[in-house]
Each structure stands twice: as structure tokens, then as C-alpha cells.
Image (cartoon, rainbow, N blue to C red; front, side, top):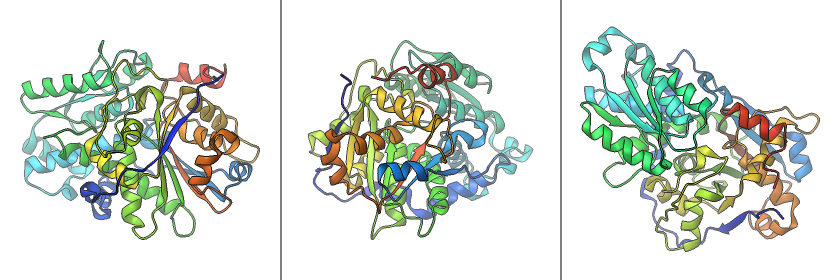
Length: 401
């Protein structure tokens, strides 16, 4: 018998959300303008899954496909690159609007700024994005990966010229390692999307960078651009906080319902929601899951501030949920396009289908008011970033239970 999805509706007492301003629309537009300045920038596809929507009894299902982002097969570069630009702008005493790709790759910039070393911890996608941006801007990158990281993801980062290691500790300990090394390094900077006391600016800039993806999706949706429901996955929660914050600010009078999805092994946000007192919770241990991008046991405090107020439900998902979503997208219903979605990208589709088709979750499905009028938006945040694992799951049926 397969392990069930655990879920809870958000019953945390309402509180003012001081961090919602991080995702103010004007700040997101600054990030998007920065990304537009890159010659590699294109708007990633929003895939309409009409046949799946009909099967699930929904008004519409749309999936943002981030496997096309900057040729890096994942969305993460949006956050790291914009945070680097904001940091550089601050060091130069200039506005980030002046930090275009052309300027940041110019000799004038090199003469004015010199070189910094950007440290980060990652399962792969974030580190690859930081390394990619650092290489193009003439900067250095040092990337620490947690134990169990895929060799293919290591190789992708190394190809961008970063100094990269796979450590013997989990993700959260890699974050502490990166922070300690940056503190000892001249012009060392930590680029991380988790926040802690005294380290809030850079995570907030990373979240604003993620806002480019949400902003594109809102413009691509038909009619008003307002989904009724958003399913969004979470590791430390910065992506989820960014997406939720953006849509709450865009539709303040009628925001969508937000469903936050985590890997069972690293469900720190779910644990905080179950506790119900508004305080964040942490999860320790190896954090072993196929959803490597979600294997984070300590929540971002900025994101938690947003999610504890505005999320409708929190789901803790076993690995089979994501594997199901990967296979559904790879072999869609006739008439729907196929999408290559990786382990951290497909959990939303997997969960949505299970909530509809398994009567065990009928109470949650009804509570979320999912019906024939629902317009559901999801984000496939990565493609096959671990090709061998992808084939084991999609071709060989791994993690079916």
C-alpha cells in the first residue's frame, strides 16, 4: 500500500504580512526588465492541458514550463542572477535598472567593480544558475552540493567554471558551510534563497527574480490572467512565497487559492502549518527524496511570513506523487502536449490528479472548491536535470509506490 499524501488546511491565525511588500509589482518589474536585457531571454511556454482539465472536471489547467529558461533546464537562474545584479548595484551606489547585461559584461563594469566570489549551496539548479551568471559577468562562483547529489548536476555546474564540491552533509549544512566560507573570503558573498536573522536582503532579491516567472504566467493566461488556484512546490519556500506574494499583490481583492506542496522527507512548511501557532518549524536528517530541489528542512523566514497568511493548504507528498506527475506529463492524454518535467517540477500535476481521482482526498478537494469553474495554474520548475533518474522514473516506472 502506497504512503498517502498528508495535508492540512491553513488554520494559522491571520496576521499582518510584513514581507508581502518584497513581491510588490514594481519590484518584480525591475527584475523582469533585468532579465529582458539578456540576449538569452525568452518568455517560457505556458502549456494548456485541456484534455487533462476535462478528465479532472476542471475549467482549465495551465503549466508553466521552465525547462526552456536560458537554456539551463530550470527556473533558478532568475533568482540568483537578479540578486547578483542587486548586490552589484548596491556596491556601486547605482540603481539596479542600470545593471543591464550589456553593462555588466563591459570593460567599464570590470574597471568599476572588479571581481567578487559568490558562494552558494544547491542540489544543482540554483548553483548552476549562479555559476552561469557569474561566468558571464566575469565573477567567481563556489558551489557546495549536499550528499547524494547527482553527478550530472555536478557536471553541469562545473562546466560553467565554478569551484564545486559534493559534501557529506545535507543541504542546510551546506548553506552554513557556504556562509562561513564567504565570511572568510575577501569580496565573498552568499547567494542563497533561504533567509535567517541578519540575512534577508539577498533572499528577498532572489524571490523578486523568481517573480519574472509568475509575471510571465499571469500575462500568458487567457482573459483576466487570474487563476482561481495555484499549486506551487516548496523547498525552503522562497519560490512558493514569491509566487504567492506576486499573485496576492496582483489580485489583492480576489487572490487565488494557493496549495503548497513539499517532499515528505523535507516538509518543514507543512509541519509549521500543522503546529498552527505561526512559528516556523524545521526538519532534520538526510532529507532523502527524489525531489532534490525541494530537499530543504529549514524554511525561509521571509517566505514563511507570506505563506502562513496566504496559503490555503499545505501538502506533504511522498516521492510517488512526483513520479506520477512526471509520467503524466511525458505521456499526456491525446490532444495535450507532452512536457519534460523533472522530479521537483511535476509534483503539482501529480498531486492535483490524485486529489481528484482518489476519494480519500475528497474532503480536501471540496474544501479547496475545485470544480468545473476552476482555472488551475502550476509550475514545472525543471526539465530532466538528472537524465538517468528521469528515464528510470518515466521509462522504467520507478517510484510507482
